Image (cartoon, rainbow, N blue to C red; front, side, top):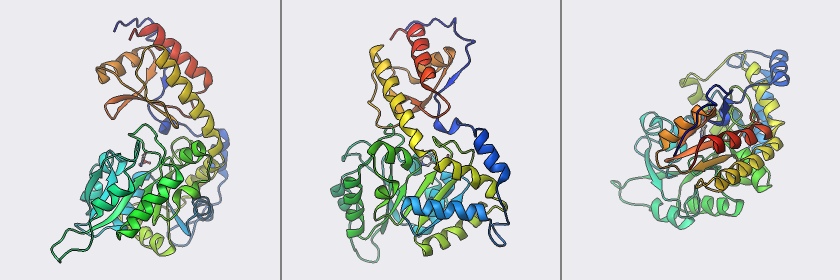
Length: 347
Ligand SMILES: *Cc1c(COP(=O)(O)O)cnc(C)c1O
């Protein structure tokens, strides 16, 4: 690989994550104008409006705003699991590798990763049934939860289609497991599959979703489930320090974010175009299903450093170079990135 870094001073094109998206002026004015109240003493009307709308969109009876997706997942796992319970999740799930072991350390669960034998990011129902085991004597390990992820980040934003989702939930419920869905990017899955988000939550006991990724909100996620589940999770959120007062300023941004789900189609088209362009330049690229492009490299950190010198910012993921498309990189930026990479790197 030879490098020409004459372009070192070019303004960077940021493909590190869809979390780098910044609130635009429409979002900022919605935040500035939000009606607010003390959400712990009584209620913040904008937080309540967001929770009701999010529950509706996700097809769940109730929902709870949280500051981050990590807190939403932790509140969910802490509510579902008792200490020592084993839980299943597809290998490399965010709850397994990106949340600092909090599923074990704070929620008390014993994680068991499942192979992606059903397709990228998902096990087969047979694998879930086999891993769940069944009733045993008092000294038997208890497995109580399946935690799915749609889209699956480390599998390159892979989607689980509705029929497979439903079969996985059925396998879990038949074997006595509850189901949590980490739907941080459920919006991307919904747009890619052309089905409403609620179709992708069918049967789950809880679902988390992020507003602070491709939808562009600065802060905010949601955790949805039954009314009883959300009441328990609300106590958990409080213990974790996630009870906020005039949260409406933040929830207002999440409401604007929810209006922008359809825009994700542009990110998906840009991901396909970036992947095709990289492939034309000799890169080995996984065909993207949503907004994440994984590209193989002999030396991932050296390649990321070279890309940075060309003004193209990326991060490592699953042993590859990860490019994430989002609303703050437009069509021209993708063309420009391909141009910079083509001029600077000979694969
Ligand atoms: C980003 C992400 C989260 C957590 O989101 P934060 O808001 O960054 O804490 C959870 N799950 C998946 C799959 C994610 O990609």
